[in-house]
Length: 206
Image (tube, rainbow, N blue to C red; front, side, top):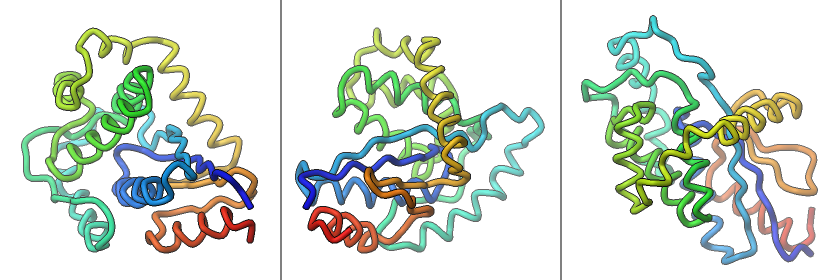
């Protein structure tokens, strides 16, 4: 029997399925009240800017969000309806989330959830500096700390986590690895699938 389960989650803020997984795993964390710890890791689906990508191409892509939106236990989605974007690349929201983590777990959790909701439900470009600062303020974090998103150490941490995923042969997101279990769970599983997996580990059945 395990006292606590740690779930290491590779995820990207531009991934709709990662949004669904985040909602479900956060619910798992709350349900098991201190017996489940989530460790969020950066995975960069778009590691570099793509200057050729147009807003119209991006709007067409977001039609695919209707599929994750059909899941009844995930996030809230809206096909892109604003003139913001297209988002440049995955790095900006990750470094901002890591800057929030410097202020504690509650600050990270608030920023993590705010980034996902802003992008998928509100159609805001979470790769723009001014949007990221606005979201930072939305969750009540001090302006002076926002500048740390530009720290070399934070950028290196994001890149190191992404590279570590490659070394572990993590090739898609979301991917969840439970401490003590060698085989990861890949893809946004239903809530009950995550719950049974965690409950079995806590009970010592796996």
